[in-house]
Each structure stands twice: as structure tokens, then as C-alpha cells.
Image 1: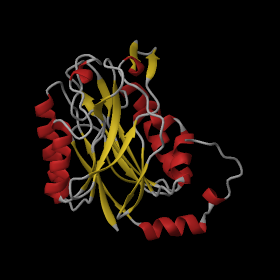
Image 2: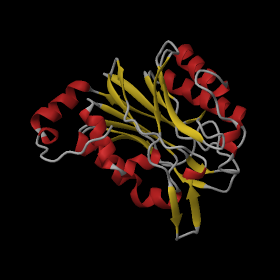
Image 3: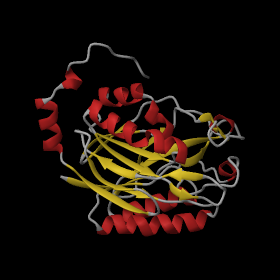
Image 4: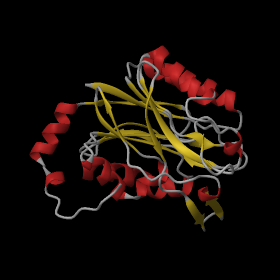
Length: 274
């Protein structure tokens, strides 16, 4: 059995301050004996403008955000999922929203570039989001072999696309991590229902690490970070504010659920994902 931790933050516009807060919370998670620690989407920067992240983009293997993640994983001896990091892409005006995975030696062992981009107008409060203006979408479904199971990677808006999670399941996923920054409006309506549904239908553990609170840029994020088991039980959650939630990943329990209620083996329809 392994303890997994989801970190919740309300990141601001100061990169170094955000990294300092993330480091404090990673330490807290490690002190709770977590071996897997997941940071939220945009943990290092929630800029005043969506274009601010382009200004701090990093090349693979270079830059203060990646250095921070590697050092934290190595120092605490944890597997660390670096929420999303703005990584350089072919278009100089955009970035990849990259979910980076570091092993307990501080080596980068996995990368997933967010596939589904949040281009949405919320009529209730006239919020507009156009992630495609500054983010280049990824196109690869990614799992990572870990000592505590096969881990699938997803980010925020991906949660609304069950075919991605079927693709992760087809690649052997036993755990799915979900760094996120759900809006307050959509989070209240759908966050818990979707997180639990993805866990139940794929019989996986979901470690959902969210932004939660008010941000300097005027945005409000939903929070409610949680760890959910393959039966859909919420093992721990944090409604608002900065902090850490933990849950035990029990592979024997998961295998028992999959044997006794083998719905994932009863599938008759499938889709193909690259």
C-alpha cells in the first residue's frame, strides 16, 4: 500500500513565491508519509494575463520550475507530479501545458502535454477562457510505470472526456492523476461528479489536485482536491484553501474490486486513441 497526496494551492503572479508555497506543501505531504505527491495545474504561476505563462516557458530539462521539481522529488524521496509546467513549443507565442513526472531520485520519467483546451464562455458570470490562444494542444495518451502501479496522466478539462480515460485504462492505468484549476462555476456543478465517475467507470484511484481560492488576477477556482478509490469513495478532500489531502492506494483492494465487479472487462464498444 502507498500513500498518495494531492496538494491544493491558490497560486498567484509571483513565480518564486508560488514555488516556496509548493515546497512547503510538498514537505507537509512527505511528512505524512506520502510516496506520490501531485501538484495542481499552473502551480508555479497564475498570471494576470494568459500570456504571462509564455514569458516563463522552459525548454526540456532547463529552467527554475523543472529544477525545483527535480530537487523536491530528490530531497523528499517522493514521486512528484508537477501539475503543469509551461514548456516551449514550435510556436513562440504559445506553450505546451506539460504535466511532468519525477521519480524519487529527481529524474524526469514522464511527460504529458494537455490535450483538451478550455475554450469556453461561462454565461453565468461572463467569464471567457481561450486556452488555445496561448497553449498548443498535445496529442499523446501517456502512462508511467511506477513502484505503486501504472499511472495515467490527465489535466483539468481532460476530465470531461471519458475516452481519454479509457485510453489510459487500455494502457494499464491503475492510478490516474489530475492536476486541475476548475473554475468556481463549473466546479460547483460538475467537479465531484466527474472525478468520481472517472474512478468508478475505470476502477482506478484518482488523485485530483486543484487550485482552490481567490487569485490576484481576479479568478476564483473551485478547489475540493480529493483522492478517490476505484469504488468511487472519497478518501480525503479539501474544500478550499491551501493544504494537502492524502489517501492510501491499495492494489489488493483494487484487484478485488476488478475481480468481483468486472465491468471493465465487459466492454463491447471501444475507441482508438493514439
